[in-house]
Structures are given as structure tokens and as C-alpha cells.
Length: 201
Image 1 (cartoon, rainbow, N blue to C red):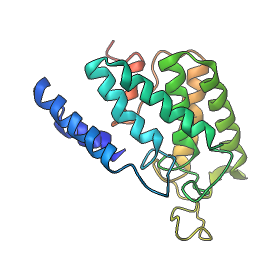
Image 2 (spheres, rainbow, N blue to C red; image 1 turned 90 degrees about the vertical axis):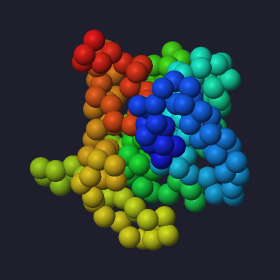
Image 3 (cartoon, rainbow, N blue to C red; image 1 turned 30 degrees about the vertical axis):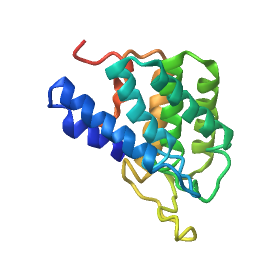
């Protein structure tokens, strides 16, 4: 997510300066991608990193960036997430680093490529998100272990990025998408929003 935020800081620049900033960000990602611990979500994983390369694809129309986005997504699918947890994908029920961000990524990938496997993955992610919820009349909420280093500490946060609102929002995103809605409200820094018709259009 931070990679795309870097790009958005430069968007007011002219096209040449913007491209240079984007290419420098791509170089940074390539040089800092080698680790023994892999996160899967929006904040540090393939979901968030794909946004940089989607922006690069939009700016250059180079097929290599489109292919790399799919490689990231296939890699994510191969891990079994969000059904299967790991050191880099612990039980965190939030948009930032959990299943809600992964769900929305699968929806975006289906919109981007038209491949049914991504829509099926979105349905599966939605089932997992619903299954992780806790219902106490009249509220449904999600408990999350926000800190990877304190997996035993679980709380039901309310926020959009790290709480129940993000979980509910991702389910609404899927509901609107399968209902054929033209406009789906995006997160401000999400470059995939250009795949959908905006209110202004």
C-alpha cells in the first residue's frame, strides 16, 4: 500500500517526472523483495505490490507489468490464503493485512482479466470472512490479532483498515460487483478504481 502512496504523492507532476518516480519505486521494490518472511495482504504483500504494477501498466501499457500482476496473484493463490494461515499471514481479520483486502484484490483481478478463477477465489474469501465473524445480537464483528508478534492478543476493532468495518466493506464490495453495479466506491489510494465507472462519468 505504501508503494502506491509514494506514487500518488507524485501524481501532480508532469508525465515524464511521474514516470521517473514510478520507475524508481519499481526499482526499490525489486531490490527489497528478497526475504524469508512473506506477507500476503495490502500493506506489505502481493495485493498491495500489485497496485504499483497496475499503475505502471496504466502509464506504459507494457504487457510485462500486466503479466507480473497475474504472477503475484497466482503466487497468492498457491499459498492457500486466505483459508490457510502462515507466519506472514496470521489470523488478522482486517483490510490491511487480512482476507478483506485479498477478497477485493480477487474482484479487481476478475474485472481486470475476466478470468473466472479469480471470481471463484473471491467467493471463497467471502465465505472465510463470514465464517470468522462473531454475532452477538444485534452486532456482527470480527476479532483480529493485529500484531503478528502477539497472536494471542485478539480484539474486535471497529476501523476500516484494521477492524470490522473493513471486513463488512469487502463483503459489500462483492455484493455490489456480482449485482452488476457500475460504480463501486474505492479506497482513495486504490489504482484499480479506474476499472470501474466513476460517478463523474
